[in-house]
Amino acid sequence: MGPRDEAPKSTPSGTERWGFGARFGSGFGSRIGSRFGGLLGASGGEQGESPGTPGDQAGLHLGFGFTHTQYSADHGAPDATRRAAALLSAQPMPQNQHLMGWGAENPEPSPGRYDFEALDERVALMRATGGTPVLTLCGAPDWMKGGRKGRTDWNRLEAAPAPRHYADFARLAGVVARRYPDIRHFLVWNELKGFYDEDRRRWNHEGYTELYNLVHAELKRQNPENRVGGPYVVVDHEPPGDEDGSPDVRGPWGALDRRAVEAIRYWNEHKAGADFVVVDGASYTREGHRTIPDEFAATEKFADVTRWLRSVTDLPVWWAEWYVEPPAEDGRACGRDGWSEQRRTAVQATAMMWLALSGAATAFYWNPQQAAGSDCPGCLWRSTHLDGGGHELPMGRLLGRFAREFPPGATFRPVVASAEAGARIQVLADEGAVLVVNTERRRVVASVDGRVLTLAPYEVCWLDG
Image (tube, rainbow, N blue to C red; front, side, top):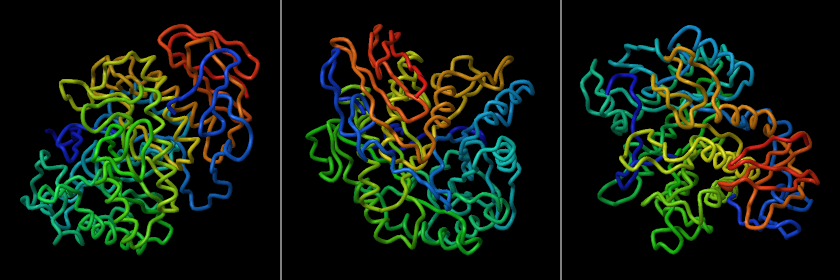
């Protein structure tokens, strides 16, 4: 791998991972319901209100944004980078960047010798485009994990620092906090990478929590206003009825992996402090990548997990990544191209509805662009390395408008909605906007608040509130 190459995802099983559904009726005049208000025919009351954040002085509810990865708007053809930057400036969103890898170089190749040039460029982009900057403190320089000083082996990006170097990593976090004093939000590590205990076949949540507590203390020492969260574990799930599924969190989509639940509970009980809890995950199963009962209904997992996390930790819930489309069968990193862009965007819209409605404080979309290929499934904008690059793509339009129409604190209202026999639609509304999603691969006639709509296959439609 090159020094700015994308890092592959990892899971306990070693397979590649990433991270309301509607049990809704069909037919005009039929009863359409959900466990959450504000969706399809829900009726009044506090269920239709987001857990919202009036007076969120701590700035913990940032809403929807994205994570920069290997390729982003800081590099490419000048006209293309300007176009992409203009898109970001037009709708400022929280933007997340990793400390090392995912577009950044090794920040400390040797003890006390720093290289922040690439990270400086990303931070400059976040500042220039008006987004709230966020840093994920992952990964660690090689000398902290058994490698040679002055060398960077990018194949070992996902290795965790050795316990004897936990304090060194915390010190580096402090250096970073001083270098970027306007950054106030920090995620500690990513997906517990390198913290899986193969002998005990579970996460080494004790080791991670020790690292987390040291980093938390150092960041708070630098500035008490710094906001810190963990454990950024992958909330994988098993299919319904699987014995490895936890009884704590389950639904028609399946049940969370027991190991993820154990890691979250341990961290929550032994953390020195936290301003938010952060996880990532996908709506398909850990093994087999199945979306149960279907790709739209499976996304209700995001709401179920969010509500459980809020009840267990009493902290704002951040989703560092979320995924709805199963990975490519050939196992390519970032390979998600089995769906049409219309289908992909419709399922993403449904997932975002559940995240917003269940009270997720912040959620980051992963990977805004790819390299120089003209085909970029699910990207936010066309690659800035292409002539004519930087133009907004369907997922970019959805993410930007969703962030604008349904900001943190939005109060969702009841909607009277129905669809023709055999069809399902998803609806979310507040006083200013209504989002309607056709979950069918065919044209559907629907009624939303008395307005009759003819929706194209997998259409994502916005209406005035």
